[in-house]
Image 1: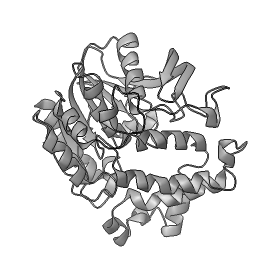
Image 2: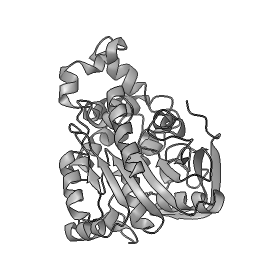
Image 3: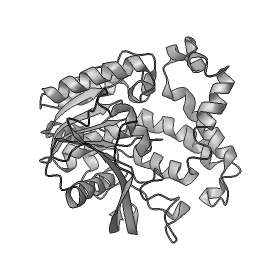
Length: 345
């Protein structure tokens, strides 16, 4: 693990979200390195916590804290920043308001400027939902960000991606113990069903065909993989209402909605093209060849709209979406090489 600060908490006070207002919202974050160095912002992804960001941080990793001042920030609803599970009544549990990506960027900007005295962000980098936030940053604050890196992410959640997310969400919210979010103990049936419904989407078909689910001997069978990795990965560590609220943020990701009152609007292709075309920050877009819900084809469309010298580099891996999340050493090495090259340019 890289040496970084302990988890810090910034209290925003009264904070407006897309779905309402929290009386005392807070954002969790960690810092690595010397504040005099160029600042890199590294937000969390779906299923990510601040300590899970360490896979990319270290002197021998993609983000070197001896060269950069790295700030990791936790998404609202991840259980560390304000979430259904840690917010008191009257906004606890299912009463927690809906959250947009823009809400998160505004909160992260407050941490950077009010607490850490950051004047300029050299680069925002993220994986999955973190990659979507990386796209949002230069749209929300066009003069504050020089570069951004989106790994297995997108500027807008596609209709296919939204449809995929309806599967695990339905498995969770329709379970016999979810109780419309008013559960009084962990809804194990729902969380187990959620993990199983999600599992096949995270990897490419070839990965399964090559028995990747055995994880080099860590698992004895597909059933063992599902039980340990996907049921066990959420049980006891993730609150069900947190998972649902965070999933909604993901579903409604769309940079064309920045600055607008609509949280969930129909896709505006002309607006999408003009929004991406107006981004000044230079981007590195890194989809995985076999990602089932952030496919390279979507990244190619996004690249066609950007006029800022951004570049597309595809991760050639059978690991699907998980290629960008520290699951495969070979993919990690490739991402490290490309990210460090981009940061040096």
